[in-house]
Amino acid sequence: MTRKRNTLDGWAALLDGTAEGDLIDLFGREARLRRSAEALASDELAEGAWVDEAEPATERVRLAAQDADDSVTFADAQVRVRAEWDGGTLVLVQELGPAGVTAMVGGTPVPLHPGRPASVSVDAVPTELVLLDHRGRRRVLRPVT
Amino acid sequence: MSETDSLPELVRDFELREARAAELLDQYERNVRHMSRTYPGAWFATGHKDEEGVVDLAHRTFTVCARVEKGRFPFSSRRPFRCFVEEQFDGRAVRYHSFYAKLSIARELMRDDYARNLRRDPVLRWRADLYGAVGDVLKAMEAAGALERQSQGNSLPPRWAVTATGPRLTVPLARIEDALRDDQNHDLKHIVEEVLRRGGPLSQSRLTNVAEAVLGTPEAEDPVFQTAAPPAGVQVGIRRSIVRAWETLDGEDRNLMVGLARGDSYDDIIARQPRLKHRVAATRAVTRCGQVFLAAVAEEAGIDPTGGIPAGIQPRRLVECVLEVLAEVVPEIQAAVGHTGGAR
Image (cartoon, rainbow over all chains, first blue to last red):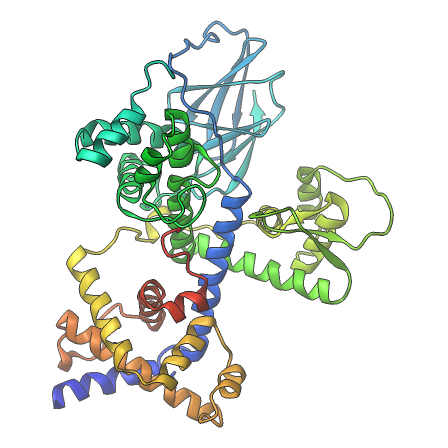
């Protein structure tokens, strides 16, 4: 009993606001964070963020842009992506940077895997490339020469 | 695909005879892998879009379909597999409700994982807080008559618009972001006002995205947050101890905890609890309830009582842990914190 009381005395000091903030404020902050997190995730789900309802194709289509003659490299300090366009399909290859990056091309999310081509149909090569990292943070890559 | 679509038969065989589970699970993995390809890692339980995260999601989708009764359309309080069989859904309908619909079983699980990561990852916590702050700005501006809500219909969040003052041209969001980034005024109200005035009506989450792009997120190295769950035994033990502690509280203390879970301020708590006449009394009551939970967790975890506060234990983590468990198992707390309860 004494041993338990010692523990509770120690932890009570932590709880009663002497160690780090006031417990009511802590509960308030955490509760508010919980509500915001639930609401933000629900909003993004309801609005269809990241949703592509297309099922996978039954046959794999060979990417036809290997001989493209219109290519550009987009980069910032951490990420570099080469883009090749054949007049209809844009093929993106992530040459540098972390995994888990998604390119947004004309509103279409295109997941990138370092070193592997990913394609998307577009009418023209974009002037800049918008990427989302694995947390969904946006970064804009500009063309480099 | 429809002529050779084996999915309905696999679902039927599993639902009626518990047969061909491996084949069915394989189809679930394949489709979850495809469906989830567009999502950032923050939407996965592990915080990363890696093999483990994708397979984990596929298995949980399968488990929900097999075991969890869902109230909403089209399930009507049936387990999804039961529903698929009884309604004689074809493969496309099974895939739609399991994976590809905007509100599919798999996407709802991802929503819950994302919400959990929003609470734990420092960068994502910042985003969740920003969302809350944007909400405060919107409500204040609505109360002042500067904004109005526009309904987008069932199950969609409202959009917010500046109170109508005649037709105006809208500007692409990317241009507004660029302009605001160059602007020296990074006050959130100013950002919200400018985006809605120049960009047209937007939802709170879209406004948050724009504000995040303008303000820039705090930089944090990747491995700072741990999303991996503790061992199942530990989790079950802590859950049991917190529930046990909850059951020892009297009605007034439970009401106090519900208020805390709701994020009530001192004034709210004092107003709702007649026995707590001032802040000191409220602090004492909260401390006493906190000690009950602490004692239960310490006992369950076998923490050395003579050792004082274990290293690394922070009040915030303790509060988070208590709320996490209570929100999952106590209906009053679920209602207070708006917990989705596994996306029923």
